[in-house]
Amino acid sequence: MSAAELFADADNARTARLVTAAGLKDALARLPDAARRHAEASGFEGAASQVVILPVGAGVDALVGAGQGSSAFEFAGAAMALPEGGWALEDLPEGIDPTEAAIAFLLGSYQFTRYKSPRRAPATLAAPEGCDVEEAARVARGARLTRDLVNTPAGDMLPSNLEAVMRDLGEVHGASVTSIVGDDLLAQNYPMIHAVGRAADDAPRLIEMEWGDESHPRLALVGKGVCFDSGGLDIKPANGMLLMKKDMGGAANVLGLAEMIMSAKLPVRLHVLIPAVENAISGNAFRPGDILKSRKGLTVEIGNTDAEGRLVLADAITKAAESGPDLLIDMATLTGAARVALGPELAPVYTEVEGLAEALQAEGKACDDLIWPMPLHGGYDVWMESEIADLSNTSSAPFAGSVTAALFLRRFARDAKAWAHFDIFAWNPSSRPGKPAGGEMLGARALYRVLKQRYGG
Image (cartoon, rainbow, N blue to C red; front, top):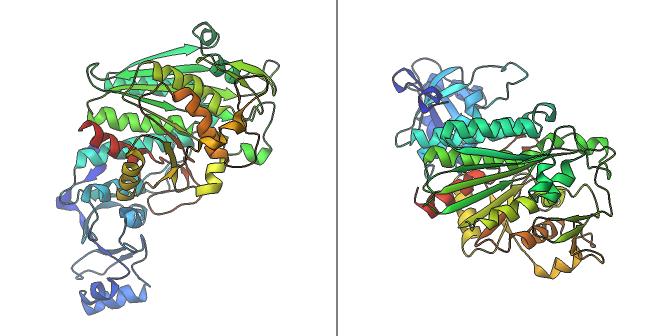
């Protein structure tokens, strides 16, 4: 959707005044007596995304709670709480950027409607003064794309479907998209992508997209595209499979990020790589104890077929590094251990690039897309050793599962000039203002802000 389609006409918009919990007393005192009594009787306290519609003559049409006023997402839930129609926000809390306020509101209006009609039309926002409407629209489009992809069940989002999405995205932005499918992966030396996906009816593939001026710095984005993960022969229990449609959340985040980058026309040569597979079970499924050869030439002993994401990423990262990118980023729903460590709201990042983790953390705080740096502690490398191969895809110790997964990937990223790995959840277990339950862009909005700084967009 264009910016014009996303935003309301300011001339015909009603007005909603933002009120923080700390500013409640002063805000109520500004109202006429009847309106103040109505707000008090309605229990309005300025809580995050709390809404009260005021009577005619109040000087403002509604009050919207902004909570502590520390994030635009605190009032983003108003998009589904205010009545349908156009609304203008006044009294943005101090420190809230107007563009970020618009992004949060647009994401607060998100509903996944592929299989079910929307429960209501959201309120629309008149662009706040000082808002970059094109920027807000592109970030919202990217995040909505990510959410839609993660929310789509695997039956409609298998490797071939994911390829179709990439081709559509490439066509919109004038990018070239190619794929290597099925046994051609073996012929072109992507043996681990092939091994993980060969048991599925929908063939495994490496999908690549190239965009931008070849003279610009090369930026490689790799996204884990495990479209459904049964666990393979080391099969997951039933409750462990319920959310495995989201195991392509890394790919979904990368594609949403690519939408932002291409829409903003950042001066980069963008290279997107998605190893897309279904980790299924059949007579030719790869087995525990198998030795796989990787594109890099390293051999990998399979300690568990449910640690498959790192295998497909390894071949794709190796390919990405061969082109000598200025920066290589991978994003993956890689380990449950990352969720145990940080929960669903923080995006763990692993990098040894000086200043990158700090920049990500600062930009994540600025846009409420929180990043937490994690250690690439080399002392744990020994846990990935194998007696009969160059390394194992599982650790010999029951500790630091997210760290050891990152160390596994580092073996394949050593040729990159600069590399960072995100071990994300890509899912909201419950709804929060602006962040409904379901698929989520996690870490990519912060990363986009850092990329704009790095490449001067």
